[in-house]
Length: 331
Ligand code: MEV
Image (tube, rainbow, N blue to C red; front, side, top):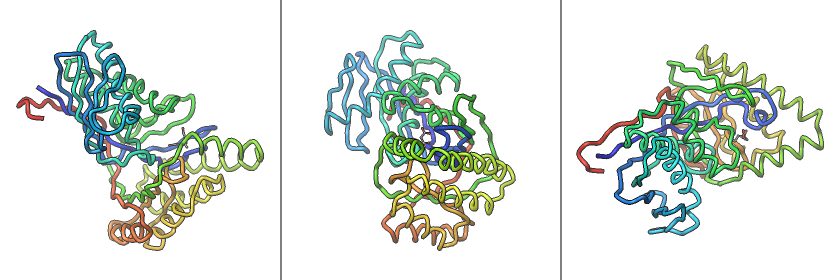
């Protein structure tokens, strides 16, 4: 018997960077998912097959042994080792697992792929050992894996991936979760340029130190955009969401985190009829997002590809982590 769990990626609609200081960020689960199929092993190894990403190997006594791909790739996989071990510890199980990882979420570009894989691993291993984990437990245990990759993450990625829907996230405040029934048509444009969130957060911190009054005003305005943006989501006002995205992008540029590639994709999307477009996540590369009417989606996608971006159509989703048992032994 094996178990498959799938979990969604995410995008930040409003409030990245300002949320590091104060004010909310609005984060949506997206209908691009990661899948993990877990099965039991007779030994205590955690075996990870991530062949789509070009590597596989196993952990024994927390040491990584590559089978295909480079040894340093094990750093990413160690999050899955830790998440699996935490679940087994939590359930008083002294065992091992095979994990087959597949993902439709591009990696390291701010779309929450590592959190989705950690959440799916946690849920799959929990179900495999009949742990009946609650969503709260899945979010908590998967966070232990996330910390391996990101150091001190906010916890927003694994929360939104576990529960789905919309999250209003504010530092030192409980997460506020919402569901909306409307599907919002988005296009993501991936510059394919990987970036370090930590470096970008550090650069904004230095800008803030040099120009504290100015940067404080930008931070407060972005916080206001997030608050108004959430209201626009509830009203299903796509036009206003787009307008607020445009203003948010301008302020992120003022903070120095946009790039010529991101700006090209943002302006191309607007030219092709988007209501609005902005970078999403830390900036410095990674992705931008555009919202538009259904009829303009194809031309926006073409506009993104024209500037060598990868275009990905997504909708928001209320569907968080889902688990199913596979009884035919065929995985
Ligand atoms: C990165 O996805 C979002 C930032 O706001 C950093 C953070 O909130 O930890 C740039």
